[in-house]
Image (cartoon, rainbow, N blue to C red; front, side, top):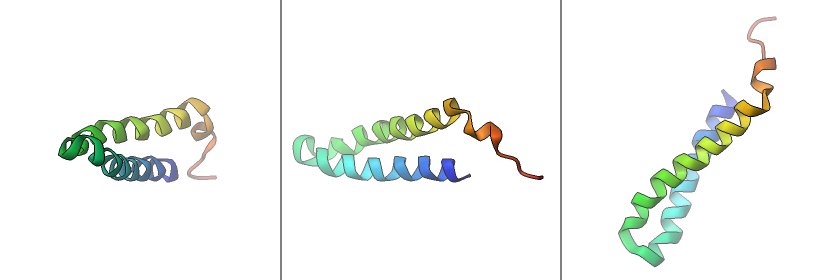
Length: 62
């Protein structure tokens, strides 16, 4: 659950930061460019977590 939360927060913060930074260059369309970029960053964190294999070692019940 922590990895999912980290990925979601990375997505959110990346969208806000990218939209803010790009707004000076491309105006209001920065919002629309920040959405897929945020998704890509969230995907990258999730993909790295899945490929690491650490999630398979976790147990819910001992």
